[in-house]
Image 1 (cartoon, rainbow, N blue to C red):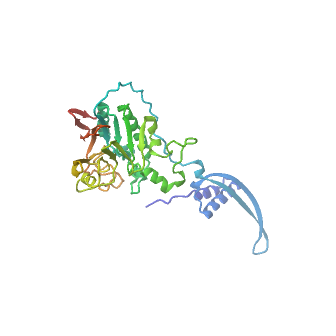
Image 2: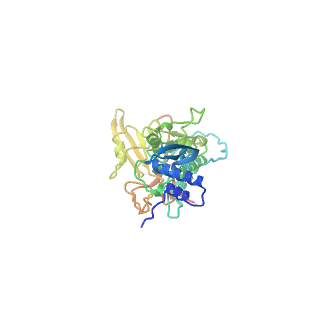
Image 3: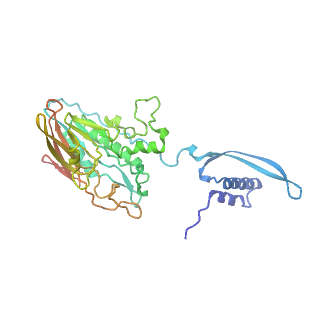
Length: 394
């Protein structure tokens, strides 16, 4: 049997009728309760009662006798004037990185780029109220170790490093509520970790469809705030944007917005995109090979794929490659997806996703023939091996 919720108006009326109240207070509370009830105003929507005044009027009753009526006038301020009652999204934590040691420049015939795939940083709440990540901390730890060992000239994040389930157009359960701030905090830390691991690398972060949820959400729900910047900072990132909230400028991380148009060319023969194509029952790589004229590395699908295609060109045979490095997200159903499921409390159930964790590493020329070589590194439960070196999450 459900208990009827008592409204604030009912409570005020009850207080007003208590005999120990003096007559003036009784009339005031009764009039206030009556006014709220007649106007259909929820007391929780009231911020303050700014002004109260009284007056009197005369009327004649049915017998022609004069009757005096007290009139009450209330001026309310709305609750939203005091700001929202929930935490407002803030930039991630400020992180101070040590100054990197000077490195003597060495001319190498080939440079290296590490391709960081979709991490889907996000959280849901466990039964005890604690936060459970949808990204895989072990896989991220391995990726950072590899980057620190290789000291590449370039680190490229293909996008979807933040999941943003609260901002998406799909239904999400209450278990994912109020987790956006924690996601921003963790993504900020990831940006700092990438810079700490590769202090001299050029670091790029492409917007994926999940990063794009933030500007889309603002356009759909608060269009007037879209593109707002700090005062007197016309060249800064918009306040409510991934690069601003995650402090990318502080870590010298270059953000490439505008999914699906964002891209990065490693050299003249190889580009990196987040991607839009998904072939569930086959190789997505072959879909790209059928449409691309140059080699491409893509994300979005969370699977490790590599395929090649050779075509006839004016100069002879031309071979191009398409590859996906996988993901750094959990592959056990924690990330909301079309194949996932939730229990009756809205928490993800364990399900086997056809996803694989990994990294991509490119050796490349940025002049001459612009040759390159792509290597895939697989990560299994916080363990991986690359070029004979074993990596384990600590």
